[in-house]
Amino acid sequence: MQVVAADEREAGVRATLNLGHTFGHAVETNLGYGEWLHGEAVSVGMCMAADMSRRLGWITPELEKRTIDLLKRAQLPTTLPEGLGKEDFMATMAVDKKVANGVLRLILLTGELGGCVFTSEFDKEMLDETLEEYCAKE
Image (cartoon, rainbow, N blue to C red; front, side):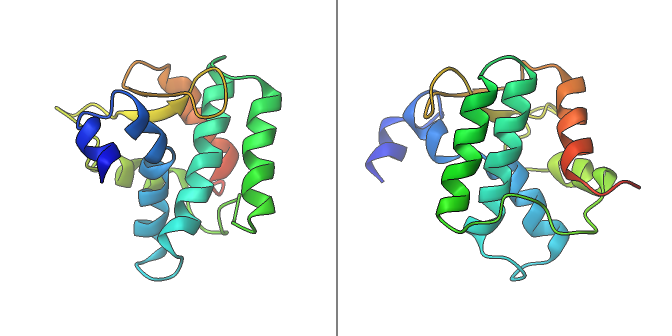
């Protein structure tokens, strides 16, 4: 609770706590509540955020791999289950609580592991490429 109180607008350390959540909420919604634990969905969301961050040039491929490897070591899922399509994923993300004035905002990695930014300033093509990588082909 101290982190939330100290960073109500997710401008600093609190962004780290929410890394992967927008992607993860879309996983939970599309799978159906209770199919996966919240942490399992967020784990895949963190992998997706790392993928997108690398595509944007904000982190190195080595840091993306390290992020995924840490989640695997914790025996958490790092890929989506079959059947989650890109269009459904986008529709769900469009109504996430982090959308403001119709603009999707994501928490992405920058620099070293644990360095995060809460932003809508990203190349939408990179989001599309990440979803293409992780979602079922429609």
